[in-house]
Image (cartoon, rainbow, N blue to C red; front, side, top):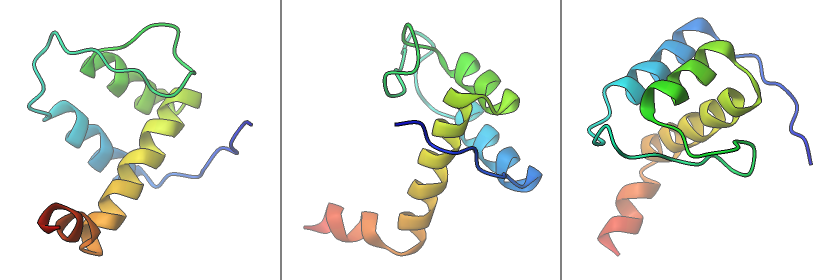
Length: 82
């Protein structure tokens, strides 16, 4: 099922990019995003997809914005505290 392209404000896109680029993940860590990517990608590759706002970039943006939303609502803290 293909998700529709979302309209992303430049400020939100920059927040997502900065969160990715300032990640504390080691440079040898590779991640997969759904079944859209052929091979796992590194942090810089993820940032490139976000910059292009292609299908993978859109998924990354959605995940980050959803995470920030639940973080704001305190859901993450509730889950972690049991």
